[in-house]
Length: 432
Image 1 (cartoon, rainbow, N blue to C red):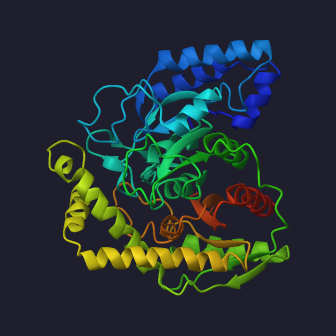
Image 2: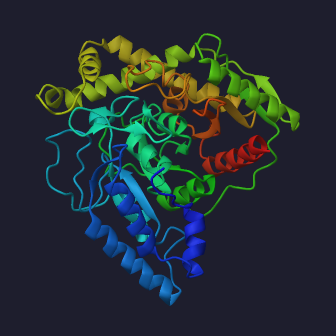
């Protein structure tokens, strides 16, 4: 890592105790980003960030910080509107002028004093589970620079994993927060559908589009969620975690490290008295993922086909093929996909009435080498909560070989803070 930035919670304590100032932390972040070898950022506005940090300095001197995030540097994915930045969405000729209004979720963070350091890299139109963009470049993994950072929020995950910011904001439609978080050894949350407003986010598939945080510390996920959702109440302090449900993963080829880690996690949880139960979704996970892809493809074709055919806009051949496929889908296929999505939501509601969490690997393999192509099944486990609208969080577990593996926790709709609390509890068990 080029820089060690503490958690947002630790920074808040240091600011209050006058051991650090927001300006010192922001300067440290900006110096590290200037030498960034990972390609995490598309745009950084140093003057704007320093001015926001100086305002936070003054508030702490008066003893009146705006929130636990006041003065804390954050990064925001470049498909989310940030005042003063271009919302390119990873498309070369999109939004050449800086936007004048923050996305509502970003506005809430800035009203809490969070300092936006810059906007982060993504594949064109946020389509893909890797962050490889012909225009804005490739984002590599700070854990292993020869490997992929995941996508589509790869720049946000890399910014956190590299220590440039303790917190970053991404978007998640089929796994785009959770997959890169799992690849980079960070925590990431896809919130319940509708909990965090998506106004100001470039649309991909509005039924599934969400904005969510990535952080190294689970406590920061909770803080960001409370501020972005404008819900300072907490449904935390849930009943003791007593049971989890696991789905049939035998039809999905897991890498050896993921299979080993997942089995070890289940064993560790069982040793503490947590009951592990096999649950049946009633449909193959591959079919769930396909339904979500169909929804994305049909809407993305309408939005981005014209730009995808303009030379130099950064779209890869794989994405162009995906968009083309979206133009060929029949109305029956689209209708069937929507119906399956509704059934998944109902079934998952029922399952979460009998177990506290549904737990899966986040991705069937760790980060791939940059010399390899995208794993076509990277979203096989993350798609479920996306099509159903339930909250889902990934927490990291490190393999013996040093590559992180993510474990996904899916909870009841609207119980996002409970999922976060239980994630912290599981993390404590795994860290022993």
